[in-house]
Image 1 (tube, helix red, strand yellow):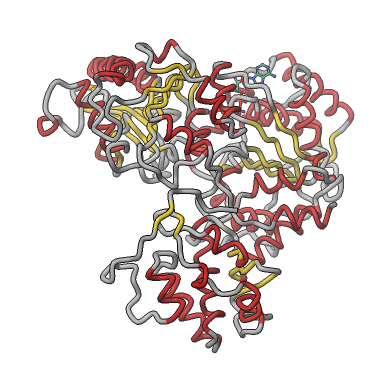
Image 2 (image 1 turned 135 degrees about the vertical axis):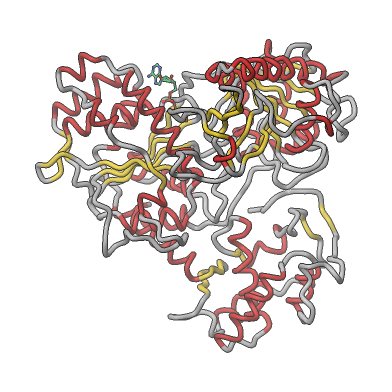
Length: 618
Ligand SMILES: Nc1ncnc2c1ncn2[C@@H]1O[C@H](COP(=O)(O)OP(=O)(O)OP(=O)(O)O)[C@@H](O)[C@H]1O
C-alpha cells in the first residue's frame, strides 16, 4: 500500500521550519527533520510516552507513527511497509538510507512490550498494524456490526408479498435496481453502489415509498431516516428524492402500491444531526444506550463517510434496524481515516456479504463517451483514456471528452492558442449569466451559471482555483483586475459556512442577480426568495472550484484543470470524481504526463476492515 507514488524527494526540513521540533532527539528527531513526522506527531508521542511511562525509543517512535497515520487517511501504521511507502507532508516519497529505519521485528517487539499497549494503553498492535486504540475499536466495532447484519439476520423489517410485487412493478425496467431494493428490505445491511446517474436515488425513492406502504416492524409501519454526510448533500438528496417520487405513476400511488406522500414527507438530514450532534465530532445524543428510533436508515454518498462516523452510526442503531449504504466507491474517499464503502465492497467478493451488495451499472444521465472514459480511469487504463480524448478541439462542447494541452503549461491561462476553445466555452456563458443577472432573471442566470464549471485540483498556483477565477473574470470583463468589482450581477458564488436559519450550506452554489436595484443571491436547490448578500456571510467566487468541493454536483460541461507539476493529491479518484460531474462534455486542461500520472496513482489507505470481514465471513 502506498500513500502516494510521487517523485522521490530527499528534502530535509529547514532547521527553522515551524514543523521542526527543537530538542527532538534520536529517531523522533531524524524522522521529524526528514519531514515525515510533523511537530504535532512528535509532541503527541512524547506526551503519550510521559503519561504511560514508556521510555523505549522505538515504542515512542511507534506512537508518533500511530498518531500520524489517520492524517493520511490510514486507520493504522503498517510497520513492515512504512519504509517503502511513507511520504512527507507534501506527499513526496522520502528516500532515507535503509538503515535509518528500525528493524520491523524489533520495532514491533518494542511496542508490544511497552506500556503503550494493553488494556488501557493508548495504542493497539495486531501483527504489524499499529493503531491508536480508538481507531482499532472503531474498526472492530464496524466489523462486528456488519457481521451481525449478514444474511437475513438482524432485520426486523418485514415486507409483505404485496410489497415484493410492488417493488417488481416499480423497478421492473432495471434488474439491478430491483435486486438492490429487494436486498435492502430483506437484510439488516445492504449496499447500493454505482456511479453517477445509475439510478441510486430513484431506486431509494421507490424503495422508501414501497416500504412505507408495505413493510412492517412488529405490525407497525416502518420508521425511516435518510442521512447524508454534508448538509449540501442532504439538501440535494431531498430534491432528487422529490423529483424521483413525483415521477412515479400517480395510478400506483392511488391504488396503494406506493406511498409517495410518505416518501416526500421524509427530509434527509446530515449524519451529525441524525445522531444528535452535541458540538463534538465524537459525542452524540444517540448511542447504544439511547438508540435511534428508526427501523430503516439510508445513508447516501457513503464514500465521504469516515470509519469513526460509521462506527458511531452503527452503534446508535438498534441491532434489528436496517442500514442501507448508498454511494460510489470510486469517488474520493472521506477526509478522515477510512474508506468504508470500498472496504465493504472488497470484503463482499467471495463472502456471503455479496448477497447484500448490488452495483448499478447503467448510466441513465451522462453522455456515453463520458461514462466510458470514466470507466477507463477507474480501471487504470492510461492508454485507453488518452486515446479516448480528442486533442485541442476548437469547440470542446462538441466532444464528449477532450484534452487541451496548454501552449505554455504551468503559466497563466491567457485563453489564447490551444486554450482558445476553453475560453470560447466559458466566456459566453459568464457574459450571458451577467446579462441575465442584470435583467433579474434569477432562474435563468442560475441555470446558465451552473451549465459549465471549471474544476481544479488545487486552490493555489497557476493551475488553481484562484488564478482560474481571475482568468475567467478577465475574459468576461474588459477591465483590468484592479477595476473589477467584487460583487456584480451574474457573479457565481459558493457558500463556505452552514446557515441552518437561511437554509444554506457549506458548498452551496448560487448567483447574484439584480432585483429592485439591489444585488441579491439565489441559491441552487433552495426554494424561497433571493437572499440579501450581506446576510450570506462567507462566500467565494466560483467560476472555478476545487474538485473536492464539486463532489455531489453536476454540470453540463466541465473543464478539469490538472497541475503541470507532480502533486500527491492528483489521484485516479480525484480525476474520476471530476470527470463524473459532467453530463455533456469534459475538457481536461493538462499535459499528457499529468493525465498519465493521475490515472496511475490510485489512493490506497491502510485498513484491515476487509480482512476482518473476510475472516469472520469467509
Ligand atoms: N431504470 C431507469 N430507467 C430509466 N431512467 C432511469 C432509471 N433509473 C434512473 N433513471 C433516470 O436516471 C437519472 C439518474 O437517476 P438518479 O438521480 O437516481 O441517479 P443517481 O445514481 O442517484 O445519481 P447521482 O449519484 O449522480 O445522484 C434520473 O433522471 C432518473 O430518472
